[in-house]
Length: 231
Image 1 (tube, rainbow, N blue to C red):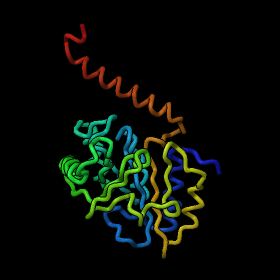
Image 2 (image 1 turned 45 degrees about the vertical axis):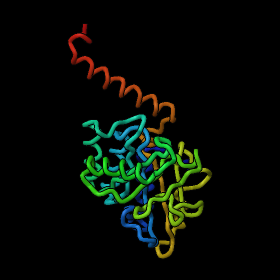
Image 3 (image 1 turned 90 degrees about the horizontal axis):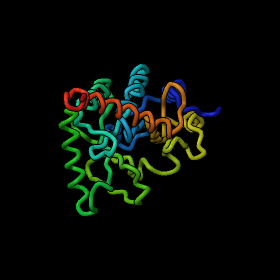
Image 4 (image 1 turned 30 degrees about the vertical axis):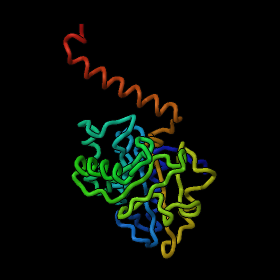
């Protein structure tokens, strides 16, 4: 089957997982056999809404990792905060997507705790899980004791980790991997980026372009409220 990054295929993934087991949230992981569904929000929180709704429709819960120092969105923005709270209201977990590149290498735990507290304030919830943003670019995988880390060795190796990074499963068949999953002994972490999925599959370039166009329109609408700008 030729995989397509659309909502129809996403529902097929969820149904396939449901036949095997009920996925757990990262905060509930205690080394037990389980499937954990992870969503890193890298471009735009709006992409996450439909994914969260699809999962909720099938009574599936997953963990959405949001960035505090993201170049593309601001979580203090009212609409983005509203999206985060809505996703949380569906029973999903909110985790921190931590970008090491935003800081010097000195005392990363202090910076992690700083961002965690901000996210806890925004989400009005305790943050127990963290995923690193693009750690392979710098080969830096800090471990924060006391928190569930998506890149912990218990969750991250080629055998138990599946990612759609850059819309590429690296030759792996997600449906076969789920089919071969043994709920009595296996651990499987699945990373699916919400920005990759839409009603009809789009290229990465079109996805980014649509994001830019949407925010261009939003920015223009904000400035239109100013009488001098109108002139």
